[in-house]
Length: 187
Length: 204
Ligand SMILES: Cc1ncc(C[n+]2csc(CCOP(=O)(O)OP(=O)(O)O)c2C)c(N)n1
Ligand SMILES: [Mg+2]
Image 1 (cartoon, rainbow over the protein chains, first blue to last red):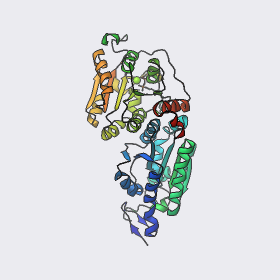
Image 2 (image 1 turned 90 degrees about the horizontal axis):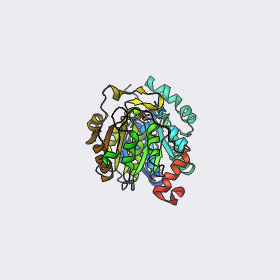
Image 3 (image 1 turned 90 degrees about the vertical axis):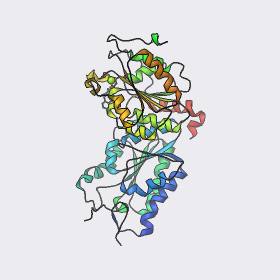
Image 4 (image 1 turned 30 degrees about the vertical axis):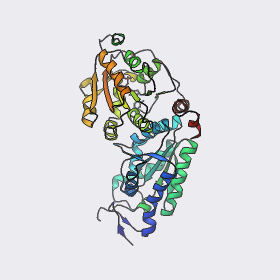
């Protein structure tokens, strides 16, 4: 079954599977006491962003560039608050040097990354950074885990949050484009 | 009091005198120092656990201040950074303006150069108006500071909690002797968190 979602993407997943994971991520953010949500929007995160915006106990901070989020999460942790950074894979490239702040200070820095440029991509410009995303993160000392099926997203995000806050380091869940659905630009 | 804030060879404000004046009787003030000279300046004023001198993360200091200010809304937070560092992350001014943290002040020590790397000129040397950019981003209290009396007023303002506040302080460009803070990041972070949160910081 093909079905457009709010991002204009076509998803081949069953409706139940395809729509549950953003709400599950939101529930995990609550469970882990996340108070600051830094983001540059991605269509794949649209539902999760709406949930966070509707929550008065969370401060949603839209950024001008993703590296601001790495810096902000460090400041949050200095003040005793937990944060998370939401972005698409191209945004990982904007974070590279700032990750040294989390590494050098041993700061919990969980990232939830929606992947582009890998599974049925339409836009050539998404491919280079999408392909480089895990290598770049790992080169900067980030523990990276992937979720390529909707039912894997919640346990992977849970593990990513636990690894960050229990072991004091940058961590990332990459949500595969197959889970999100490829953006087709009407083609 | 204002008379104590001296000037350098150029006649512009002396950066360390400015920072000492801003941190005097600091009370509950939390301070982040941008990499390079601003980190040495806050250390010269007196190394303290409530200081986070940066050794890297160029372009991130103001956003670190935002995360901290949101996490500790009852404490004044001051970011002291350089013109080069601020220019690298200048979008943060827009992000901060939108969040409107009343307890956050960002003070740029503007020597119009990249001091740490050999005194190359920055854009402010060529007229780029950081205070104007901050105001246009939506930080209404954005000041250009060139005189000692204005430094004293700035010190009062960053304790007042009527922010966000931005100040571009024109300072003398002379390079000063290094006053180095600890450089083990894990210690800097842990001592800061303990000073703010108490021993439970380490059990969070
Ligand atoms: C991403 C990055 N680019 C370049 C540098 C090199 N660098 C270190 S300090 C500095 C200049 C900082 O200038 P400014 O913020 O104006 O401080 P000043 O020393 O002039 O007070 C530069 C370019 C760096 N550390 N990181
Ligand atoms: Mg400078």
